[in-house]
Image (cartoon, rainbow, N blue to C red; front, side, top):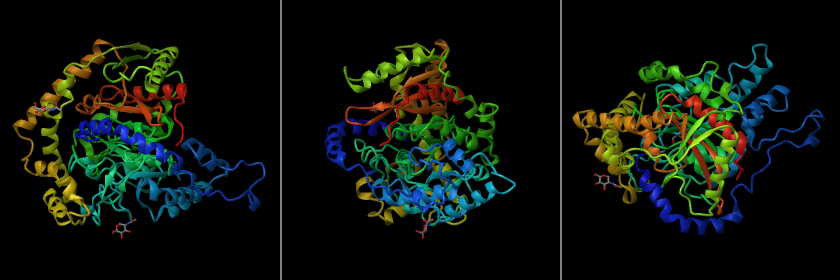
Amino acid sequence: MTFSSAFSLLNFVLLLPLLLAMAVSALRASPLDSVPDSRPTMAAGKRPLLQAPFEFEEATVAGIQAAFKDGSLTSYRLVQHYLNRIAALNPKLNAVIEVNPDALAAASQADRRRSSAGGPIGPLDGIPVLVKDSISTRDKLNTTSGSLALLGSVVPRDAGVIKRLRHAGAVILGKASMSEWDHFRSLEPPQGWSPRGGQGRSPYPAVGNHPCGTSSGSAIAVAANLVAVSLGTDLFGSITCPAGTNSVVGIKPTSGLTSRSGIVPISPRFDTVGPMARTVEDAAALLDVIAGYDPLDAKMTAAAAGFIPSGGFRRLLNPGGLSGKRLGIMRHPYFDFPSGSTEEKTFATHFETMKLKGAELIDNLRLKNERVIQNYTTSGQSTLLLAEFKISVNAYLKDLVSSPSRSLADVIAFNKRHPVEERMGEFGQPIFLASEETNGICAAEQAAIKRMEELSEEGMHKLMKENRLDAVVFTLSNFLYATSIGGFPVVTVPAGYSGSGKPFGICFTGLRGSDSTLIEIAYAFEQATNARKKP
Ligand SMILES: *[C@@H]1O[C@H](CO)[C@@H](O)[C@H](O)[C@H]1NC(C)=O
Ligand SMILES: *[C@@H]1O[C@H](CO)[C@@H](O)[C@H](O)[C@H]1NC(C)=O
């Protein structure tokens, strides 16, 4: 979500009865019913008799790697399977905008490497990864942030995180759909919609056309087994919200822990790139590869490099990770579910489980200045983002090798020239227009920066210090504002399903650099609760 999410959440609540009605009628037509099985039949007789066929559904990175090793799977076959599945399901889900025409060739290369003396070149060798459409790839794929105004643009180089993925041997499978321009053009478009990707749809019928954004396609694809792992970006819940809504794991890293170079930006202060996966372990495996210093995002990545634990995030995973942890529960209003509801009962059970696993819960915590923080006008966030967007998107567009749009002004003009495709009559582009009016980081923007720092200091910092917390626990809500104004990390894990089958997640957050603690806690929670059910 961008800062418009207050509206989105509100809309969602208002639309809930309608959604439920739609969900009931959609229930019998789960989009996953018609998936062809791309597994070769055993009757072909080429497979060793004792080797179990590889189970593609819910496959994990570790499972894929083990299958590569024992010869029951090749990267080529895995990529072929995912491409088939995308071909079958994407017309309904709209999770993928483009598949990489070179993905199978890259997979073959990985297979050849593995069988040669050299072995795998890195920890993700041959593993397919789907990436959000706002993340630059210097290959045949377009990078457009969902917008027609960037179609045909040529990026100068791979994004910092893509460089790292390729170095680790990963196969870029394609581009995931998203909310156009990270929902920063207007408050009006539905989350998960873009002119290039259409309306993204959750594989969970109860969620349907409301997959949440902005990294909607990245979440939908992982949820629907179109791929095992994907990349999204986040400023204000853009990983957290679609992850929770589609029952997958999302890590929104501390901003700067992962490079933002080559990302269609909103704000260099807050933007972050993070993994989405079906398990915490898979998300951590991806984070291990993408986190770290990038000379093209030098200041922030250097500052955050110290947050990376030696040996990586994946090494921290242990089922006892909740033991001795002090967790602050933001009970009111974030866990105020109707009495007797599935949500209420599920979280009550989860809190008991956390205690059984050795965590100490500090309940009923409140954030100081919550009202001020949750209003992006009074927090100063809107003032700052409007100015930073213009500066950073202009820099991004100028850096392109070629592009139909070289500035925010060009994009605005493009949208005016393409009112039908960009649905200008319905949505307009008021945020773009307001951003274009700004003139850099001046007194008002400086004051906004100071204000958000003070609000974070008085809010999250004080809350965590006074209660000696390891993490703050909340569920999808306006609490995201408090995490957003500080560039704080959030880890989301599937927590359950409402009576109508709508997934919900649990979120763990903390101060900048607490990523490793949050991942440790999230993993132990996941192992203890095992809440995810495939759609
Ligand atoms: C990128 O966009 C161009 C222009 O629409 C299109 O011809 C091309 O096929 C796209 N690339 C991929 C990999 O889909
Ligand atoms: C946010 O604050 C502004 C300025 O004080 C006010 O006009 C607006 O109504 C507030 N919005 C909400 C949703 O409370």
